[in-house]
Structures are given as C-alpha cells and as structure tokens.
Image 1 (cartoon, rainbow, N blue to C red):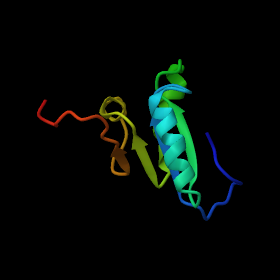
Image 2: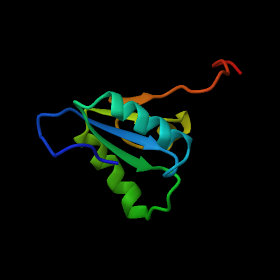
Image 3: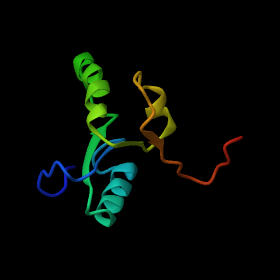
Length: 97
C-alpha cells in the first residue's frame, strides 16, 4: 500500500503487516486513512520473499522515519538497527501472559 503522490517532504511510515486482506493489513489501511500527511508503505511479512529481499529489507527500512511492526515477532525477525521500529500491541492479553 502506498498513499498519495511521492513527496520527499512527507514523513514515511513502513508498516510490517501479515498478508494482504488479513487483520493487520486492514488495521494499517484504517490508520493510514487517518494519517493522510504521511507516506505509507506496507511490507507483508507472511508473503514469500527471497533471501535477497529479506536482506534488502534491512537497508530499505532506513529510508523510513518510522517502522511499525504490527506483531512483536516481526520485529524479532529483523536483524538491523531497531531504533526507529515501533511494536503495535494488539489484543487483550497482558505482557506477562
């Protein structure tokens, strides 16, 4: 998902979601609609990716001001600087469960 015309001045958000049409993808689209001033892009973690694509994802993430991992396991899988990565907590279970 990309939104709007490419404008280098717009802050960029990379969303790490599950699959197109699944729950996290729907949530990302709803949040993206509420933040029209940002450039949104989605990387689908459960799609089939080559080893090269996974390697490039680490470099690609550096182009974004914020990376939102929709599930904590998505962040765990990343092997790059996670300073700009946010984990989206969903569900009703506590952190100690």
